[in-house]
Figure 1 (tube, one colour):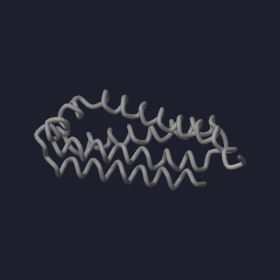
Figure 2 (figure 1 turned 180 degrees about the horizontal axis):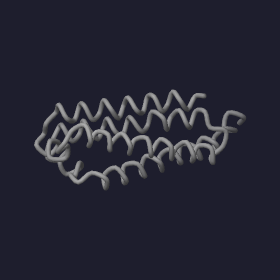
Figure 3 (figure 1 turned 180 degrees about the vertical axis):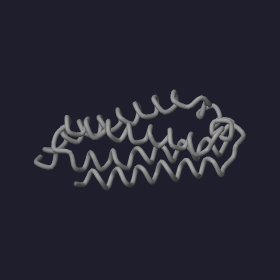
Figure 4 (figure 1 turned 120 degrees about the horizontal axis):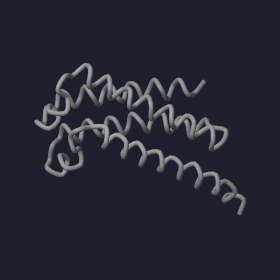
Length: 132
């Protein structure tokens, strides 16, 4: 039964990861004035693209934090860094693309791809920086 030795640590880290994902989604969905989930249910590809990019952009550094953390407190600190970085990325999107929420509501895929790309780029840089 030695192969179950790591199970408690897995449950802690995976559970914290899921908690951070839920926290990110709650924060992100409240941060944006448009209602992504409603738009996605209506078939708005731009809303889906933007949200997916932000979510993956957050999960990349979160996964790096889980892989490199030495404790759950360490993971919590780096998870918060990842949250802040993605919310900053969203603020940058809003600065670079005036009228961004309305563009997503109209289904403008170009704005969504730009947003997703920026979130993914920030997430990749964040994840790489956490390795040191």
